[in-house]
Length: 355
Image 1: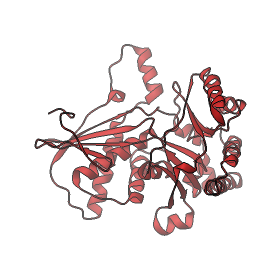
Image 2: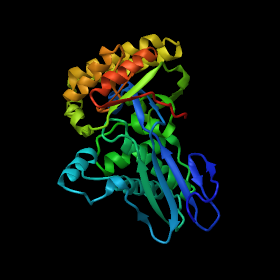
Image 3: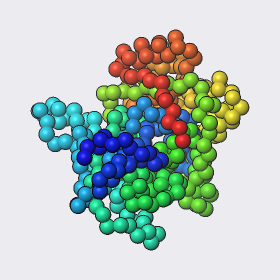
């Protein structure tokens, strides 16, 4: 039976297609934008993030005699020539998404074992796909993991609290794959919509997760997202040695994290008071402080400066390669597309994915 022969019945973010003894499950997760406060989320700070549905990562899972993980187009090993191979490595690195699925399955199994959750013995085949721009700070990897975790929960009939799901996604990346990451991406991709997050040390120590407060997406001002389609640089490059410097208590790093956390709280107040005209200046301040602390690539700096020259605000959505900001009116948006387009940067209006 093909996956589209029958009209699916939706259950949450999953799609079940009955009709034979085979059940097919589809799940999705969306890219995220760190609107304000990042990168303090990995350093007991505060952030506000949102998910948007212009792109997505999807997982398909169905019962089979043996457990199998199928490769996607990003996992291929055949190339037309050496130039294509190098281009593929520059865009996607040396590993595709199969390792993400393996790590997620392992963490899910360990969680269920630890909590005496008995899993049925049926096996499955799983595959993923994603059109989220790679390596530009939109959290494409954690979107794949989040979609995979949702599919596993549906297949085994296991319910896991959202804050625990976020911790599991983070653990799959940090503990299993040694990817530098903070909790922000995983929280917003699990909760979706627009979320204010407080990762204060006393809160994290006491309960093992932060305070996550959904906000009304209608509170947001006009926003654009711009990203490089031909650029990929690992998060670790932008994180530099900040972690070691923070752990040593270097005042410059510690005060920067506190500063970004205060900016997130400030934007939350502006949103709740409908003071959206103040938000652009706060986004700019977030980036200006980051520029003083991190070693940033010239291409990323040009993106921000070009957007600001058109009258918009601009800051990184994550680790670099994509920016977010406010703009005023269609004329400014068209100017953004024109000027950033000269740099082969795509500009979109994000469709906020509701929580």
